[in-house]
Amino acid sequence: MTEGAAMEDTTQGRGEARKIPTHELTYLRLRDMVLYGVLLPGQPVTIQGLIRDLDAGMTPVREAIRRLTAEGALALQDNRRVTVPRMTPDLFGQLVHARLAIEPKLAELAAPRLTPERIARLEAIDALIEPAIRAGDVQEYLRQNHAFHFTLYEAADATVLEDIARSLWLRFGPSLRAVLGRYIENGLPDRHADALAAMKAGDAQALAEAIRLDLTQGVEQVREALADNA
Image (cartoon, rainbow, N blue to C red):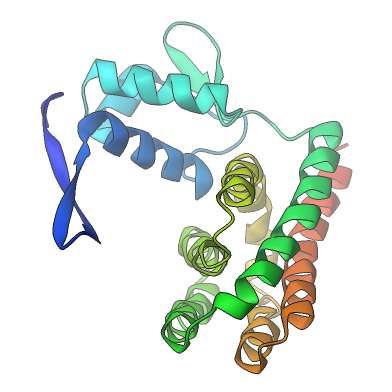
């Protein structure tokens, strides 16, 4: 792939397919490597390795690294290596506080805007989560779990809160990936069933509470891991 190339996005806008510039596509791919735990906290990777893995040129890879470093998702070690920052107790506490404040609110705002079509889409996404758990596929679980939450949050039409939530997930996701291996083999409670029931009932408060409990599950898993590694 050349640096000037572009890839066609499947998103439709005004009846036409939208082209994603190579720089943006490279950023999205590297972001997903962080978000879904392809890169683990503390794992150093070389810029040359990322160029190979992302099938992109030096310029878009460096730009993607710059953006993700500014977002706190990556840290430069030197001119040739980057790493996902390790979770610290202080950072963990801040992320938890912010997520529990913002994401239930997004769910509450989304509730009256949910169409039957969006609820059906959320059910279809949720149906992919249980097979990932049974297969012990942590990355697929994280991918579908992320899709479930942000398909819901997008309905809130609260772009400031949604952008903050996306940033928080980007900084929280790698640590969740690092600890889920110890839980996923025994199965994970399905908090999404309660959320879907609240959506169908049009109960905004119940939906917000279901999302809060869902987040708390992941928080406690990471908290236990941090305590074990202390």
